Length: 501
Image 1 (spheres, rainbow, N blue to C red):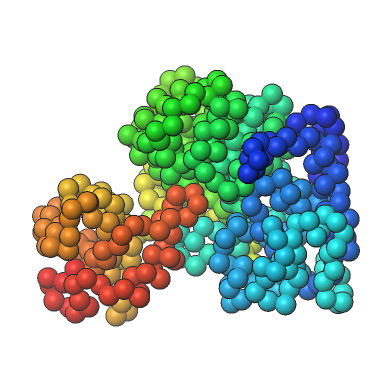
Image 2 (cartoon, one colour):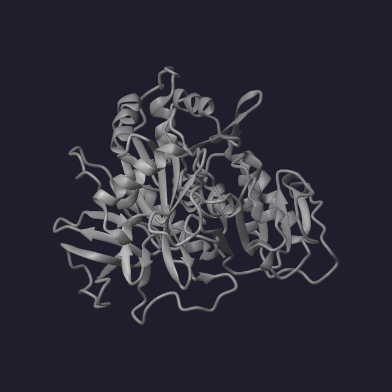
């Protein structure tokens, strides 16, 4: 078994493992204290009784959540990571509860929506973990980590990963970006997401770096962490946008040496403003919950080509599928555009509750993302998985439609998506109007689309929303958006008239 407690034992007991922002200020946690807390959690996990499913762990990004995660894994328990506040925990019909969890553990007791044990972190650490008197849950030679997909393209699924594969993914981050025990790694993104878990928490553990953690995200806390001397920052486009626009002018102790961005494309203006503010170039990271790291920008003085996500990470094999024909090019061909298939060292082993094949006969996973790889090996993501809308057999790229919409002065933000209607998909657009603009602006917006888009690309339905709901990584939360638009009438009717929008 991969023993995380042994990994912690290699660190000096009095060295700083974590700095956690609390209501009283920043608290320092040594490697020895973290090791002791994780050992207590492991002992509590060994006594845990319950259903044969995984232990659901609600991670609040605090020290106790880190110790609990390490302890559960050291005890050989499969762990399903969920971020704090997730409705998947309280919804008894969600994919989380369909795994028949052995227990649900979070910051405090009583959070479970089912009969599963509802424990707090401290309950496990104090040895009070006692579930229903049934048979013990499985103890694995190599426990699994289960992660919820983002849900940005529909209902979230649960991806199953081997712990050893995720630790290899952490070593990739360490080796590519040069994490060392002298670094302070700021992770203001959720540990329950692949980027924060692998690139942040696990990469810091395998490199001996100090973690700066903020259990309840705040922009002020992020500025404080920068002032404490964060040298590596893992952020989302949303975070860098907030930092770029922030009025907080406190200086960092030193400019961070590595700024990583994942979760979606970073607007060039936001990127420039954030880099000017922080004094360091921001490097793009491209991957997914299923695959882990696929490509990234790293360690060179010359600017990366605009819009690229860098180059493929070590150990990643790839192929391009010509989307219209299904033909594949040779592995490693460059200068191609099409759907990306990959084999990565961190590929999932399956989806919970599903026996569907994950890869083709050669072991390649279809990301579904449309990409271009130039002759220098630079990867550009043109459209993400499941975003194309199929209108009568013609594919509509929603990102292009969004660009056209937001170039209208009346539109502040737009998100374009497809909905099945009368046996085929139609194009929908959720719009946040610019200040001072009202529903009377819609006719002009539609007219502008008709001038610049093909008829099948023009949105058939426009939904005016006060804001676009987003996940913690800044992606548009399509599930929440669909909940809104299905309960709020489309502003301009549901008929088949050509003027409908």
